[in-house]
Length: 286
Image 1 (cartoon, rainbow, N blue to C red):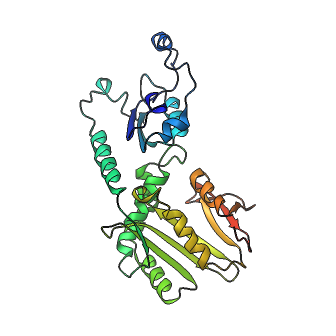
Image 2 (cartoon, rainbow, N blue to C red):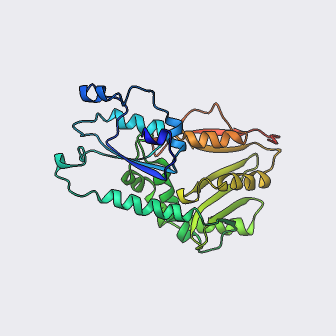
């Protein structure tokens, strides 16, 4: 991590990472941990950081890698039975690293792609469902939410195959565009990598959701989708959306467009995930 404080790199994989000397004399003598960590520089000097940790690591208390994750916003994978990922648990292979490298190199290649925002077509619901579930995994899995990939599958996995509602929503958007707004984001290969869904009630505009896969993030697509919503919405009425309490990135994004947290009490999705309401007051032209 120290190297990335002062050097640009493509990305890094952290395994059993710690940020203190853990009280070990040898580590103290190295003076590696003496200086404060420049977390912002470490994060900004690379395109991605993937982290692996295990709660049964005999050397690294789990609070250490969790702190690193929170400080760097890493793509975090936490296990309960991987120890120190080596001889202590009789591991001679680490297939997950190979999978991560393949995926990240493919994503790096995809950054050369262009993405388009399009009207949906009937049939798109078949691809939107699995993409929606994948977006949950990419955006929400981690210690802040307490979600694992399995938990996501258990909670919203049905979205991948239960397509009737989404199909009807697309039809509604095509037939009544003043009431329902729907857009899909596609890459050069025509693959759906994001979508926007909005609706209007008699008294308000509702941003039902913006979901974008990691491969399409960082390209201004979220901002473009938000502008589509703001152009379509009735500015004489307030606009509402719900956001998970742990999703700090989303809070920052929506705040840029004039959304603020309402006084409505925190609610829970499936009695587990806390979420709050945000509003963009009527007449806001920012």
